[in-house]
Every structure is written in structure tokens, then in C-alpha cells.
Length: 204
Image 1 (cartoon, rainbow, N blue to C red):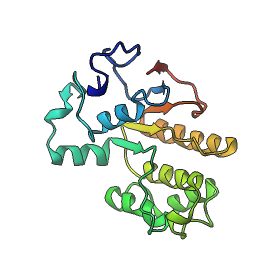
Image 2: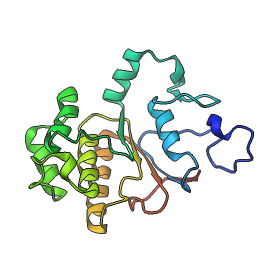
Image 3: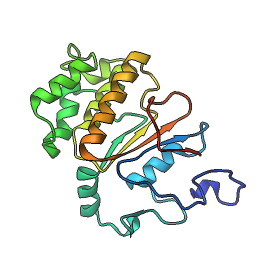
């Protein structure tokens, strides 16, 4: 449980519970604003540790992971779409994606071009990310997320600024990538979310 919620009467399917996320399954975490969904994603990804209890990967407490182990885990196992996106505004959309792909070697240049085209961004790939709309930036960050091996895809409000057709396309791409690598999907939502069959839904 986050330190901010200690001592409060929190009603949740996750906080103060024993939860297991399994590869190959999909999970939806529904939450009201301010109930800790982005915090939960940050805990899983290892950015924050201000929580009580234990988070374990394959039985190993993540607090025991060294910086080198975290680097390898994030490079090979955890693909994360941040709610705030964390793109580099001065770089082009393509350069933002290549920063990740150059570290992982996951996609070919042709595959990246196809992702830009499929998501309606072919004419935006060489524009600076800071000049794109938030919805366009969201799609760029989504492409970047796909450019790495993954045991789990973690998506924090991934379609908040995406129209229905774009959201459908993103969902289809996500499901195809998850099937290919037998990866799990963890999606948070305070409203709209990717329309897919979830194996389990939690209320945060």
C-alpha cells in the first residue's frame, strides 16, 4: 500500500491484497483520479518504493534488485507507456522511438515505418515531438513502447486522447504484440480503455 494511504480505510481490490499478474493474461485496473493507479505502475516499474508490503518478480523482492538488474529488467521484460508520455520534445517522433529501439534492436526500420503508417503518423515521423498534439504524442509513445521485448506491457491511461478508430488500431497492435511474445497486459483507466477481453478487472 502507498505510504499516502496508510491509516486510511481504503476499499480496493489491490491495496492490502495479495495479487498475482501472469504472463499471457490481460488485466484492467479501473480507478478514480487520485487513487494511486499511476503510483501502482511506478511501483511495478521500480521508479518508486514508498509502499508497504512486497512486490516480487518470479518470487524475488524487487527492492533487492541492483541498478544493473533493473536496467536489464526494463530493457527485456517491462514495456511501459507512461501517462505523461515522457517524450523528448526537441527530438522528432522517429528519433524518440529510435532511442528505445537502438537499445533493444527489437524492430527493423521497415517495421517502425509500418507502425507510424498504421497509426496515421507517417507524415509526422520527422516532426519534432513537441509540435505534435497530445493524441499524436500518445501514439508515438505507444510505438516506442512496442520497440522492446516484453513479458508485460504496462499502459497508464493509453487512449485518453485517442479517437475511437485510433484506439481500435492501437488495441489490435497491442494484442498482436502480446500474443507474439506471450506477454501480459496491465492497463489502467479512469474512463476509456482499450476494448479487449480482459481476464480480470480490478477496482483500485
